[in-house]
Image (cartoon, rainbow, N blue to C red; front, side, top):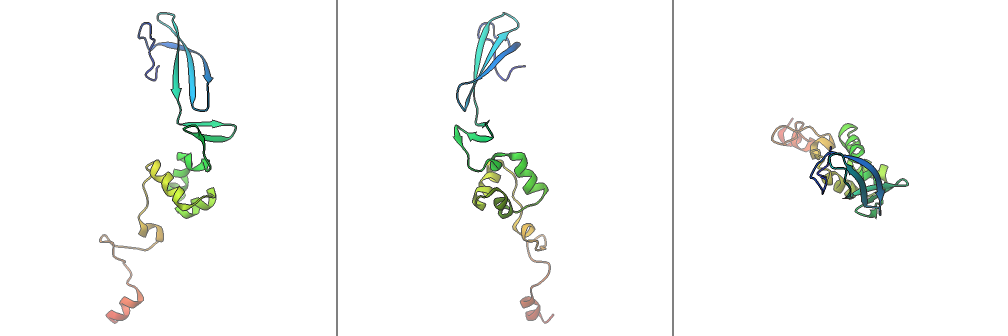
Length: 140
């Protein structure tokens, strides 16, 4: 039942949650009661992301583009809906580089450049359809 929390009195991880308090935007304190020995104790947690009144705080600082901190939304737009980073940036209202950073932060795999541009390429990375200039040189 614990997340690494144990009773300091008996070492048990069987406890009951009594209450939860927020000391600031990044610290939560659980008040717990041990079910084995009856001792009361607290467990403190530092949060990396907190949502307060519709605002997103990461490591205690308010973020400008909250959608870029929503991994599921970002994955849905980039992987499922196949929007480009430029298109996502337009939706969010930020620079493309901010979207690139968010994809990297959540380790969302980037698409190949040929896949993004729609150009067909073979396994060696060469274009399947030759350009007009290549056709002209080959007499096709």
